[in-house]
Amino acid sequence: MASTAIEKIVLASGNAGKIREIAEIFSGLNAEIVAQSKLGLESPEETGSTFVENALLKARHAAEHSGLPAMADDSGIAVDALNGRPGVRSARYAGENATDEENLDLLLEELKAVPDSERGGGFHCAAVLVFPGDTREPLIVEEVWRGTILRERRGRGGFGYDPVFLDADSQKTGAEMSREEKNAVSHRGRAFRMLCANLRDTNR
Image (tube, rainbow, N blue to C red; front, side, top):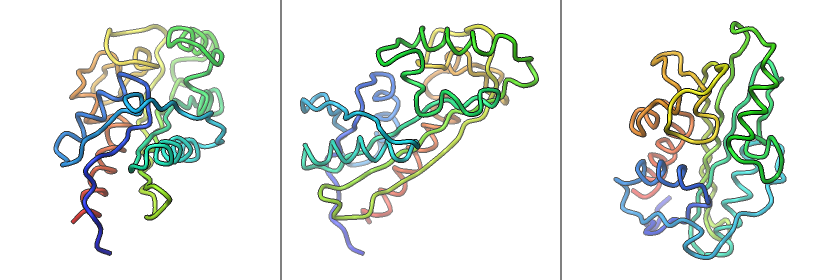
């Protein structure tokens, strides 16, 4: 199906670290990426029970109020020993207005008695792009980055749970990686690269 090239996309996120990562991934695409905050938009309440549902809620809200294509992701960490928690509540694990540090403290406390051999987990990301009025089918991508949850923080970069998430191949935490290293292997990096590729294909 022929389609008109997209010139501007709203990014439905207020997280500065996430915005920086995604803007780098999309830098080769001939479309301006605009953070929703620049348009005076805020994210709706995340009431979905899955990462895809929440990503679609945020993207559709931004598309409806901006009249532009919008993309969003919903991501979080699912820990094996906690039966997949924090999951979709990763950003609000220690409370609705919890800081990254508070969320990390709670996770480490809940895993205190879990042996090293059972501290596996994965960062999940659902990345979506929707079009105003649902004039085209949404693009949806899901990726998972597997690793191990450490007992204490390592590294000064990244955000969220990065300081305690150890990548098996590099033996670095997400917070010890450069942005380039992290984008190459992370759940969000892979999901948004795939989303970018899919968008490029639809614009041909």
